Length: 72
Image (cartoon, rainbow, N blue to C red; front, side, top):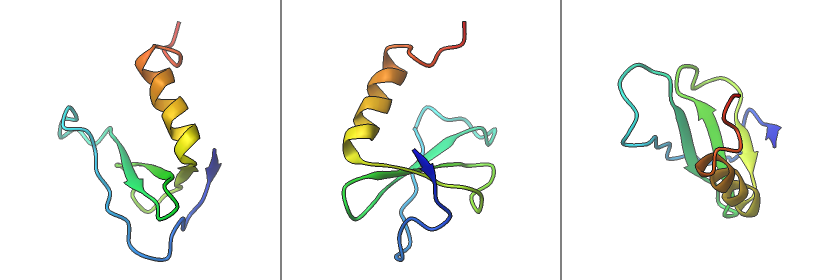
């Protein structure tokens, strides 16, 4: 993962989960032209962006779904 202020020259189509409320505490995801994904905090859309390859994004989603990142 690496912060990247401008992952693509074309505008990205940001989406957030339909499970997200309107409290602004969401992660938004955008598909990149190379098949990877960009992630950002919905509270600060002009802030840092993390880019992941498609393989690393899949691993991230699997880890999140299995509780790998849950706080103890």
